[in-house]
Image (tube, rainbow, N blue to C red; front, side, top):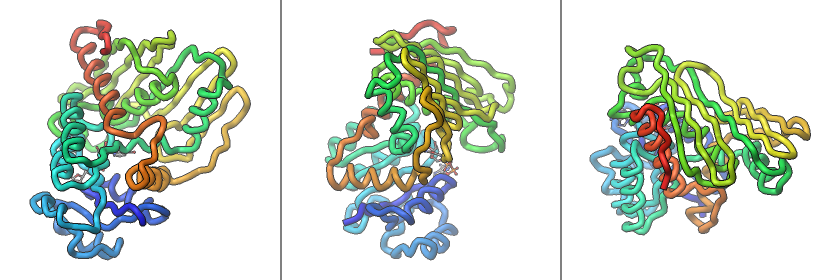
Length: 331
Ligand code: NAD
């Protein structure tokens, strides 16, 4: 059987996921949860959805009586993931939530608890974990092909447009560039080193205090890992650039673009990386079907604990900034 998925929050990313799922082998879109009635006829026709699989935020509790939906994929603004995941878990359905998992580590912990209590799985939409270039780089590092890792330098940013969007509002976004795209650099630093950082220091820059009144515009942060690696990371809503760089005693990897929808480009000391160019979300949803339906385990993980680890570090980055860049020890 295929994993039957309902999408919650039919914005731009949900649209991308729905399109990508058309070519999935193990997952199929069967339902939606939306607060915008005008979207219903469009989605119904495009994806051949049955009327009984269409929910609003008010009726989503009724999902518990629906045998045709296995999992709800929450693709709403960041600060709503917490409430939405807990609501879905209460219906007994599995949950996938978009990155960042939540707006705080405390909320991420509550989401994990709610899903464990309900006996449902909780996954986070870390699509890079399924992406072939990223997986090849992780393999090379784990197999020692770059020797001992010495340094990591990651950047992810883009120039944000519309000043009225939710991404610039603290109550919906939780934070700015760090929450939205800095999480890619942070998550990559963890899967490149295969370690959890011991400490973090961070700095913030704002060139436009009006536009970025509520959320961060540019943040740089440094993570200290047990093996001695320092990952130097930066994220911004001001510069279109994405880069992953890691150097070891025997070689290096550089990917740019490194985190967007692709094609990803990269090279190592051995030459250009040549991996299949795929639709990330297709692979992700097939992979998540295997995790949810067949209990497959995945390294690096895409579960709630993986999301929580990133959220704890994000909390610590903001704490370091509030305390003028002091070193925050991570538990
Ligand atoms: P979007 O603005 O295009 O869509 C958000 C959707 O949430 C809209 O359909 C909106 O109607 C709905 N929504 C429900 N309640 C809302 C409320 N109270 N206020 C505002 N909107 C509400 O945003 P998006 O770009 O699709 O981002 C949604 C989530 O997906 C975010 O968490 C974002 O970080 C994540 N995302 C992930 C990726 C990725 O590559 N993994 C890419 C883009 C976005």
